Length: 179
Image (cartoon, rainbow, N blue to C red):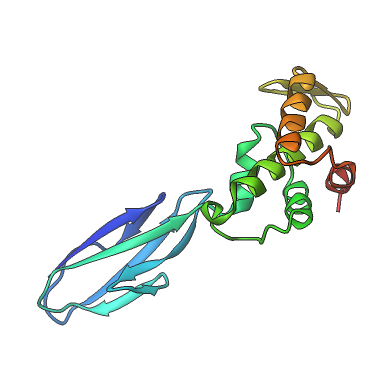
């Protein structure tokens, strides 16, 4: 029996190959760093990793489903350093469930959460006395210098306007606090 793996998303699966009749097949999914494993899909049924079954006489194709959780999507979409706590605060305020597939969140939820995170970035000072530089920001002695700040605020305001909202200072204030 030949076990073939189709991968949806980003990750690796160990265990594909040729097996003798009656031999135990063991599949293990390893998601990439920002992904999670949803399940092995076989004949319309989803199985967790690791997944074991006995090799039969027919070849089998198993689909390994990986997805990006919404919190990873949001954290990576802004392009600036944000803490997990800041992302979670925005998700709570926007009623976005934790750990769900980012593709299941609405465009509106993702865009408004992105705007909220941009506002968190432009209103939150960095901590520490070391100099760091990444993209459009640099930090030294606990204060952040953000070039392009007005453009970021304009972008966020455009998203808020698109959905009939204004800058939500409560979200920004809550997300900017350390938990």
